[in-house]
Image 1 (tube, rainbow, N blue to C red):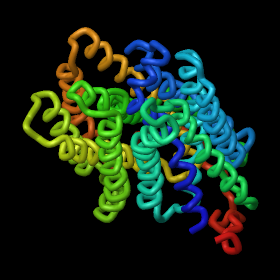
Image 2: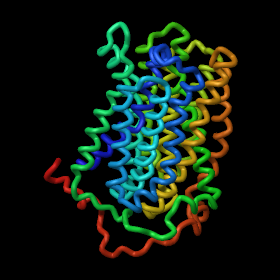
Image 3: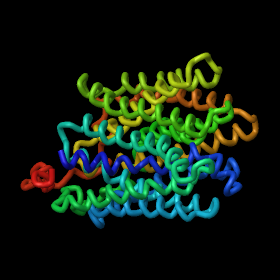
Image 4: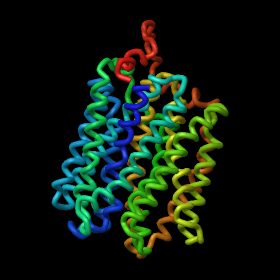
Length: 415
């Protein structure tokens, strides 16, 4: 139980810094003069560094261990968020976004393998919990940051405080993580030929990365532009942030429910992935054609589709390989390239917004991406996982003394 709590605490920090800036876009632009392309970079840069560090995170974990690696990632997030309290311009904001993204990438590269090792028989439920906490952190960032900014600044929102407040959550999670003193992972043991670089020769690894990246491109675009889209319609920053937070709440529910529901029916994720993509298509279609659908309903449908797809993709990658370290390396590759692909989406949608004056074509583009993704889901037949992964990694060395990793956590006295 104590380890599940720390997983949630860590995951809450992986999106809050990202979603906190979008609802405060107006005061940030007024104070710094930052343009729309640079605003897009507040999402693009952390997503890109998140992806790059996800690729190298497994190697970092092999060198210093998962416990130290995740601690370093949390420390980077805390420092980046704290630096925003004294940020004086666009350059400082962009630098802090990139650093926080690198910290997130390091955590995301190591945590899936840790979760798979700690809960081998409950991978669907625990991956859903981890994914839901990630989405929940995004909701906290969108809703709480405008409130904190107004609480500190009154009529003139103190956007510095609204962005920097998340350093406290990251610091708390770091201290809690380090307090799990007897943490040991068999995945920390050095292993030859266990590198994300081997995934470059696997068509299945590339397919997983492409699908993951295109799905998350919808999320990054909404994080960057959805509050601004409603601001153009006369909504306040708090109202726009609330819509984004509501979307995130739907993501949390879907991330919790979809992997567990899918696993209860077997290992085939394809019908459930198609269901989540259809939900995304419905949401983007409603935005594209300005259908008379309440913003609340659109946000819930989009959140269900995005959150469910994210969690199912994580389970999908981990299911391809039985060894936790190998599955973690594959998940790191998927996230690494995937987040780099996702980082491009806010640029595309921002460019469309700047040249058309509206978001109609941007939403249409995201709907078209979903249409492309739908037939790709048919490739993920669980009966073909072994064939798709054949020869990717060496067989894991026998570990006759390796027991369940759960007793390695001194949780009984700390719970």
